[in-house]
Image (cartoon, rainbow, N blue to C red; front, side):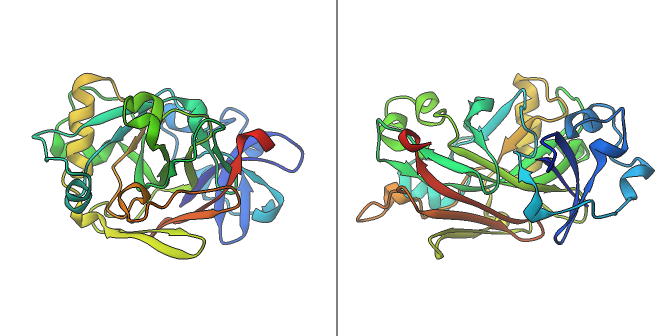
Length: 279
């Protein structure tokens, strides 16, 4: 099942299910579950009401929101593919290197990724992201996947000249992290997914999640040691090799470019680059 958050044609922020082009509005149908966050917090993703597939709208009639529009925590892994470690000259540590993003850095499927007025060094980072479905602390690695509600695509776009001196700054410009288009809740093995990033239709990153240095289970277990994981927490698992900053010549995203992140079994996250001075 593919679950999403969106703005309905009448202007309401709501959530639902998407199958092909058909979107079912669960927020309108289930009064006590106004949003996806509420469904996660109450543990009701298996509610029989979610089996309804009515096609209230076509996908072209809605405005996508980030899967979780305002997550309390966004945790990201820095170096998690061997070839990416090599291209950046980083050594592999004994535990994941993690950093945080703010909620206002998120943008949705088909929403703009903003190029800030103070930099031209906007880089792409296609990633697999995890949506946590229940609360946990000190989670055992063997049990970690039972805490996952679903998987989605993430573009951890980075402002590289700021990131050089401050990871927090380089990763937290508004509307630079794209999340979506929806989360897939069933039938995925996070260790056997194919990831591809395209810039203006040209493949710039391609990898299998089999190549992750730290598995999704390991990341969840580690993160739960230093912070409580709660429903709606987003954990992004790192980007493979091919980032623009490590190319010769360097490849930066610019106004008008279209960047896509596609993950097998999930879908395609697509965003156009816009200059923040023109939006």
